[in-house]
Image 1 (cartoon, rainbow, N blue to C red):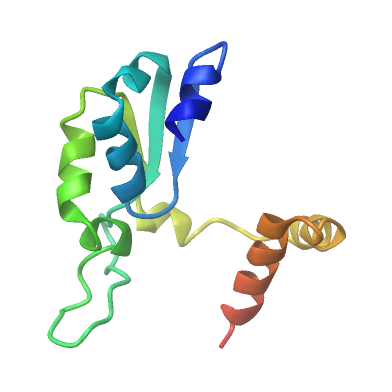
Image 2: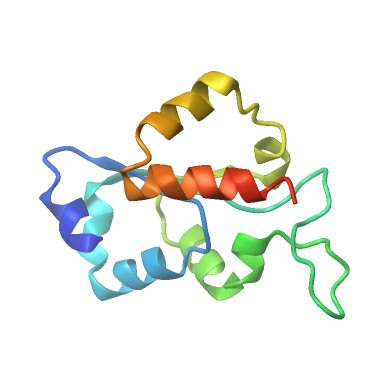
Length: 125
């Protein structure tokens, strides 16, 4: 990750859709990558909805990406980088339209497109 960020000719936006663990590890290993990061966009937290952590002895108030590694989340917020958060609230209301699903189906030979299709398919169970 650090190698790709440093290799970019222009500043990059980093999109995190899971815990911040690997990104923060890259920052700690090579802090100079901060110079080539415009913004970090992280899908994390919950504001006006319950969380998505369902575990024994937990009240379901936490959002998974922060819950899984709160130390890295804290380090990300304290990194001095421009961090934009999209909470679980907003991801719960993103419409998935048939045109999007058709596009994903047409490019299922790509690993990430195939993964998105599979995850969408099992989300109805």
